[in-house]
Length: 274
Image (tube, rainbow, N blue to C red; front, side, top):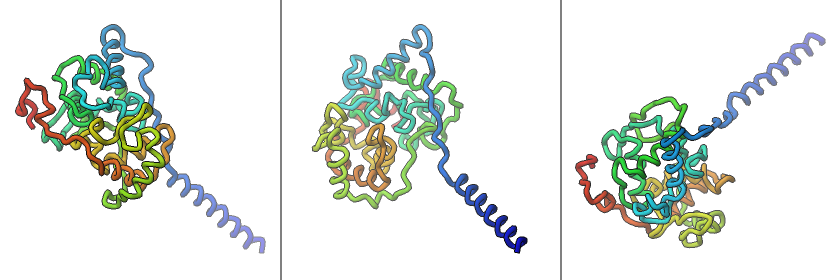
């Protein structure tokens, strides 16, 4: 009998160890720790980096960038906390992925290209000139946030190492009617009942929001961003809720995207290979 109890005790202990091991290996890994550089670079370079952050936070009203913006959005509208939020389209590490292949443009693009293209699409404006103070400052700021990252140019897509990951849910499962109720309950206080925006949040449809050429106009991309970004500092949406809200937001009218209308007047399409 004593021998039998010994065997049972060993089996129970073994089972407990197995359970602990299974729990340990299947539980989610702790989130990666993100740190911004402790200090700005010295002298003029540091001033340009600081200017880049100012433009990122005040894009639609900053004296250097406002003429290139056609809506009420700033870079921080999508890249939360001036791109320092570790999950919501962060800038941290982004510069290390460039130059990168762009399937949309069918060419290799630089970080500067990527930044300037956002003016045309997400901000429904004009593409600032290459080498302008606007583009130099923003790319310097993003590069500063990428200090210490290992250079690993992306040969598949122009995305940084910490980009927003797609959701597993299929976009055809979106329920726009359910999204309307969710929007009214969870989003309207900050973004307005008619998507017009408030002091707390930017417009999410209509003439002052991103145009139809922006990545956020695709339900899958918007849903993935909502999942990790909203509500700000208190993310709580499920995959299905994120997709439903994205579908509802993008069911509304927004500016069309015609490439030639967003390029600088002095530059033709052939310059960029479009």
